[in-house]
Length: 335
Ligand code: SD4
Image (cartoon, rainbow, N blue to C red; front, side):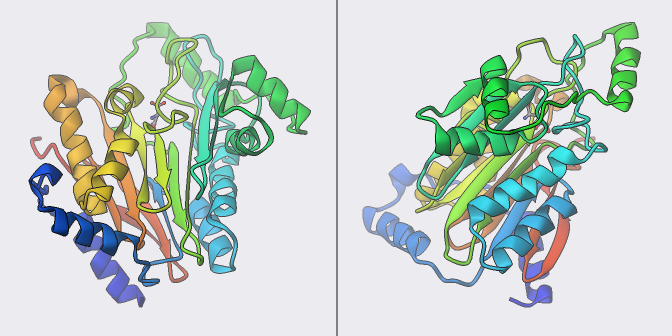
């Protein structure tokens, strides 16, 4: 697809699409079969493709180039996410991430492959590349989640280096915060960089990953949505994938990424499915004006969708050797 056509399609899918009201239960079964058939038939038109939460061109390009060159979506996800984890200027992922209230940087990450395999680390400290450790959990252990000290020790046993993740800049910001110790999880409305990434490689296979240091100044021991299968990330290689950013507690309560993939299985477009998942949150929670959640999704054809509660969520997309950042449409239009 040429760049102009891609941009046009991307902005069409991203902005101003009405929320679908069709409920599968009301859809005739021949229609359901037709929808599923369409979803499962690769058109080869829209991939390889990578989509990431927020404006993360370096990570998205890294993944995009890898799959353009014939790499697998799983390698692309791991290597792409690692770029953000190593970036000291990104204060919500990996090295340089904001600490919890006690000054500890604790990381959550997960990865999922085309076969539905999943690996994750939660509440891990002192290791930069949580996404790579999550992959090792998936591939080299009989388990799917390792937490805290166990995750750290496993990482070290696999050759990962122990690193102090609390940079001077993050320490300074934490010390400033401590003066008032005012925990206001009203964050994410303007910008945030927790990276969720979905990719389809040349072979049509989907993988996804998600990596974060979680909410700044969270309580010690807190784990968010990002490393939890079905909440921060879900992949079904027959249907598509979804991943989340923002207030993890709300994503967890609605099992957002699984919901989006199941809605796509039932015939919704990625855009409609993301909008429906955001609606689930806001209709259950009068408090929604105080937190942000953003979702991205991709289906088997490589069609993308993205939607958030508030303005300023954006996505990065790599396609046909181009990487672009697009603003997301959002639910709360009241100022
Ligand atoms: C969490 N969902 O720990 C993560 C944070 C995040 O953009 O995505 N921020 O709740």
